[in-house]
Image (tube, rainbow, N blue to C red):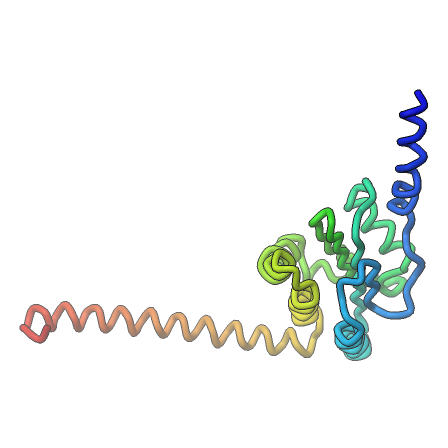
Length: 196
């Protein structure tokens, strides 16, 4: 019995810490795990401030060591609500939560931005832009990649450029396919005619 009580009192502080939600930050990036340098935080804070000033949207980042046994979905929602991510009546906020020891990441998107940033897209951003860098221990690059991808998707000025680039890329791919088909036909004719 004494052993169980001892274990409880030793673990209780860890559980308590895990259940605490940080107060609303004064900056966009909250690094409780010391995973980022001061200059890295400044780079992201400056980018996110410019993003809000330009688009009116908000993006906050929380980096912590551990969930402390909490469910990441519940904790992410609670943090977003406590921090009041997004503007009232518009719900145009994004919260990125990273828990290093648990190797878990979550992106919460307000209803006002779900048309621009779907669940499928946030999963893809995590899988392709963020997690590969996290696996290498480069948390700044993973966060920066994910941050920029979300800015591109939700900022009108960038999104217009993005759609234009997608159109150019699609035309280029179509052109390359037509070129390949033409060359393939020429090769066939050439082979028949003895050019090859």
